[in-house]
Length: 246
Image (tube, rainbow, N blue to C red; front, side, top):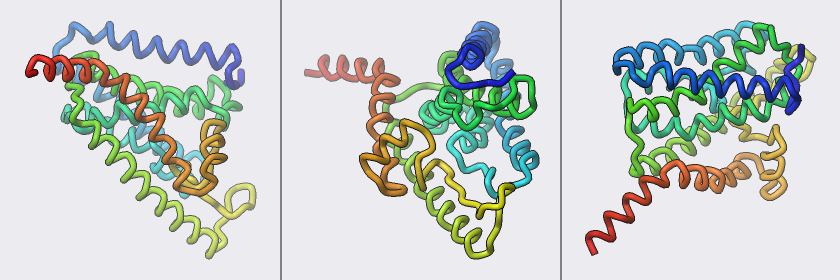
């Protein structure tokens, strides 16, 4: 059975993934902080397992280095769970959107077979990379605070800029040395999609700003809307406090 995109099978897996997250919430909501940390901490390593799998399974490690947003999320997630660091956890609330997009806009993975290792190492880590950052707040293991919005945006675009230069460096290296992929083409990496778009939404951004790196800054609009709703309760609380002082 092939996963597909927006078909019955794909939608069913998305509902199943949502069920996993909801199930974890109800399973852990009355547990101690220690139990919550152990359970979510163990699950948080699934993304690192997926990184290792991709480096080995596809025979082209240069193309599967952990520089996509979801891979960076996977590397940071265990630290966020075990330390409960507020800066990191607030950051991963935004980065979890990458996992959501990877599950919904699965065009490059649509031919994965549901009962294959490739599907398992893609689907479950992304579900947990989406769910665990949300559960950290729902289970009151860390605190959502408006003051961390600037660090979230700043870190995100700083990382994006560094990754872009990594893309440029790797592509220059593979071009100079003629390093080929399995299809016989010179390897060209596109981590965090800084070089070119690879899905319909990013295609739209690229039509507006047809330049590598810069076109992704249109994501600021999406990020601003997302963070507004995420921190809406904090914003309302801040407005109420300001009114009381007047």
